[in-house]
Image 1 (spheres, helix red, strand yellow):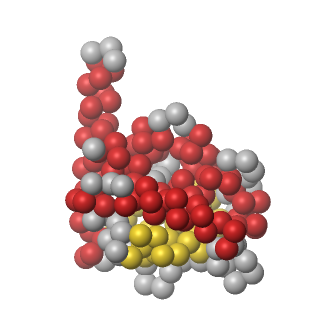
Image 2 (cartoon, rainbow, N blue to C red):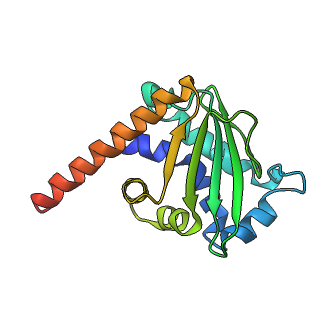
Length: 172
């Protein structure tokens, strides 16, 4: 169940990775968004697929998505920085843009190589936990509504880290 929570939290990362796995993030961003920063309509099926995944999560976990306005700062391998926006409403992704939403409720910082590592991993949840533990992906709730989901994410990351450490001690 916790494994699925982390996978759900990775939704924005997986959207990036669906096309960027075939190219670098900068090239993906150039084709994924129009000149106004809105998502290319041809990529809407990826949002629909991500929403289907979110809806399949158990109720309490799905509720963590709620209504969030996430500002994602992505450091590119060429040194540039892209700011992306993910807005969720009633546990569904409403928009994915090339700009931060107004009044973000959550900020996420990461880099292109971390996104690539997560999306190409055989264990994306484990790669996500490792990225958070290594400081390669950071997130922070900016409003009272986002404080609880980020707290839960912190607890889940800590718990998965503990289980991974225990499993390595017993040789699994």
